[in-house]
Length: 295
Image 1 (tube, rainbow, N blue to C red):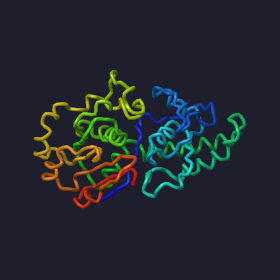
Image 2: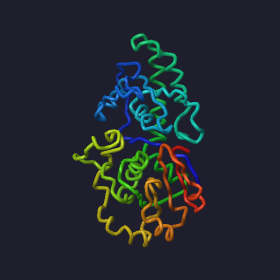
Image 3: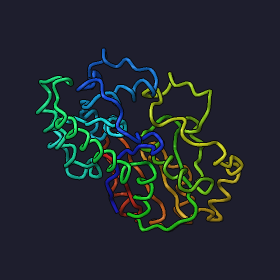
Image 4: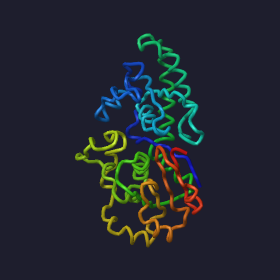
């Protein structure tokens, strides 16, 4: 009943063809704050799109949205010490391809873009295609949502996706986008997570990471706000086939009511924390499926 999970990436933001490269390695260096110069998503993505390689590392947790942003923008991640990652953490990433990218980076890191031969460039492009294809087939938000359903063997028509708080949480926000994309109005998020909905009034400066990647994604017309008024009644009437808690660390509204009405296996818990001391055995012993990012 315990399963690995990772971040994912909106399919509509993934490149369709390899961009023109103007540098060998991205100037954006993890941990070097002087290189964190990008204030909007377009400029930030373009830094990776114009680079063959970009450095990424473990932050507080091994899984990091930067890994996906690099790959989705047609760039090869260089991930030092990836061999030290625990077996069940980042378990859904293409570790073999990332290690292949590390070897390529070590081969070319002391050279320049202009000194690469056509064979060298083609080798890099072939790996980029493999990485992007893998991400599109396994690591988009919709693929992650389907992974949750397949892993729990759920064939459902409606979902209630609950949150205990509204502040940004990469795993909660990005996985919710996947479910909303697949189910539309048949996936109701409560309470509403304002920053994931498309809007011209989002204040990105107040959001973690300036809201890059995980905000302004969902059309407002695929949310029925009136369902907020009947949330308790709908739970009691078992309107939804399954219940998903986007982060059980950050609150589990209505859990007492839900646990009396729904079978335990129809209540799915997600943990997207970097550092945590999950008491996941408590929830597994109750019969819930638990998905943990840093397992």
